[in-house]
Image 1 (cartoon, rainbow, N blue to C red):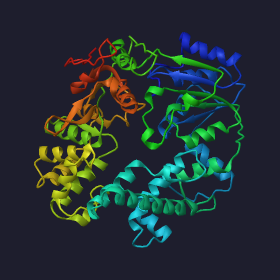
Image 2: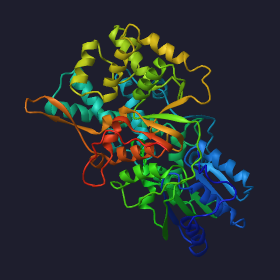
Image 3: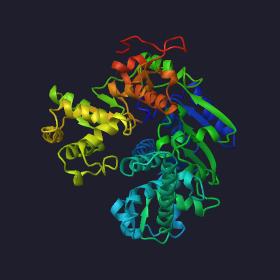
Length: 524
């Protein structure tokens, strides 16, 4: 939901007016740092409406934002604005360059990759790693694919496999990993080379990459480009944006950069602009929510946000989880409590599949396992050993706890079916269960931060007895990506914020220490 407190009768704040005025006096690129819910979309639409003599192109981060911006522009009878997603903009350029794009997919299965390349039995297991390497390359601004495009998780998986099956260690292990990386890279390069503008089959990431490699400069009909969510643009589109021969106004919030794991980078940090402006007056949430957000912002930058007294009250509620498995945990709890709920994105998600694979391994049905982390394991005890040695991420441990809570391995699949059945005919006011990542761009009257969000704010250590222990860390010591994600979650609340265990993550007024107060929840 974009700028819900603004209608056609927008009265600009002093910050917004400064941006509108600057457009008249500044004729080069402009950068706008807009904190959560501060009316960036309304500001841009007001700018467009104020200059009917000029043509604007709005590049939206995704389809939902594109549709909402287009709807708002239509409601205001704005006719000098074209709204496109970044992908649709690139697709049009690809077609202009001769791209057929008869069959466009977002992803290639392992089976499709094997078939496309005719991989031998020795290389079949490298199909997925090769695809991931190619995806990493396509998200980059690089013109050549190299070993640096091998994701760390792929390298870690090679290490686990070689230790698991070949019992390798030391230099021999390192050499074997390097050999696998180089072979996977060769396959990735071959896969990439199998595509071109003349290919009938096309991937979304592929035509974007081909556009970046094909165009030295990009001419468009519009005079001004409005680039939204600029903090989450990947390097390949950053390079494309820099080639557009038009004036650029980039808007975003560096504190909401949460897609680094997909290769995104903060375009705002490197962008050359004649002037930079800020939007700090939020229209989304009450001052009490803003106070909590500012406790986080103290450790994230110089900007502070102001709340809004006249926030409209709605009958909407959401639980925001850090992981897919956290969503399942919350869903089962609400199912037991007979509280209506809906799982954002549906029930056919990765969390369900992880539990199904664990049950398959437990029952000895190893050929039914689909997840690459578990493929190749012969016994359930092997799985338990890898968990103990921290060779698998924390979601697998959470999955075991979920299975235990829903009655163990014998009833786990039945419980999953009951959960799926509960999602039929869900009432409109049902509690929304979603991840923090999926909550981006949305808002609810009441937001509860699930307890699994606190799990990432720990580090591993050894006690005096040589035993592994988890040491809690304060918010200020957390990785930037986790701080950003938590800030996003907190700023989805309009009137009520329930923090649970996550209350300990809040810094005190002393910016150098962490708050250990047990109840920092906010209510209107």
